Image (cartoon, rainbow over the protein chains, first blue to last red):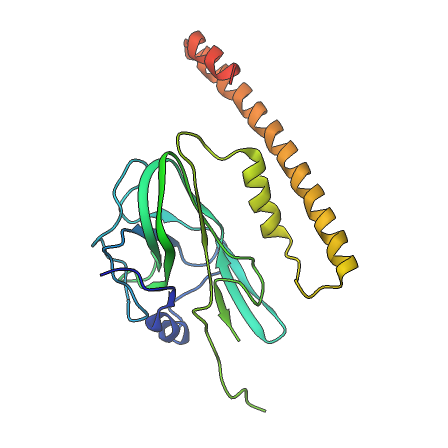
Length: 144
Length: 97
């Protein structure tokens, strides 16, 4: 049981075709990021947010924190979307990875699994997840 | 003509930045901010690349400077809020930060 890499959830791809997710800023759905310990085991087959093996600690609440949507755009033939960076301030937590999920849609369906590569810890400090550059080659969610 | 394939990749990477017993400094956040605003291609013309890096460094310096001003101004607001709430010692502690 451990994180084994980043994954775009297969159910998310299907749900995009079903119109479940709207990533537009302000008028779109509400998305959240939840943090997990390395006891969690997520893959492309992960479909929904779970409380199992979720991080506990000062400055962190179950369910995680809200993300700020960045309205999808495109360059050339690639469309892409992302979220703003997220920080848990004055926190004492250790996390190995995260799930991004749709808090508006029924059943809290997941979009992506994030593997931090190793345990990351904050101690009476800040824990920031920094999103990749927002362009057609690096953005978190890209459809080419 | 129909596009033969639509692809979504697992080829994405987030970074995690943490601190121990402190918050991020304006310089640390300004660096992330500049990274977010401007991306410089490894394949760009070397002269343009050099100009772009110089511009990015200057942007980072300006962002950090204004962040320090914002922090200082916010501490003034907090100082006055604490003073009005009858906590002059706490207010002074904030002012001296």
